[in-house]
Length: 148
Image 1: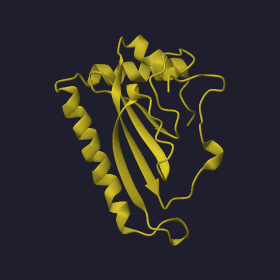
Image 2: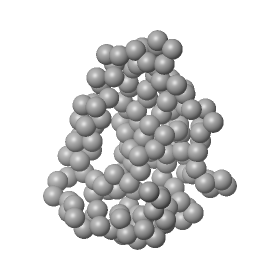
Image 3: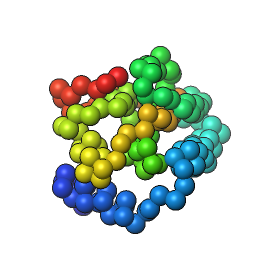
Image 4: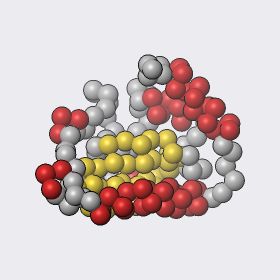
């Protein structure tokens, strides 16, 4: 199966939005996302990881407008970013989270097409005891600057 192209991904986002109308507050959706993360990631704390290292999970709620980078946290960084009404827009890895408005990013194109706005709240998940993917650190579109 081929990865959908940009136009198809925008259409997919539109279908998701249309079939999932918002009926809760942002905070309720944010808490629900944290509960799901805990449900599926916390059991990993029970097992041995890469090279017999203990897997550990650290979930941090962040306010992206404060400019803090969290690069000193230990472990692989996974992140979720939301719209102001609670849709999850980005699930990513690395430290390229932020409140970009640069239209070279597909996420920005999707948000604008759907007439949504970034929430400044995000979830960062740091996972230790897994094999690091150093070659993908800071992945993203070359030459695009983030606000962070």
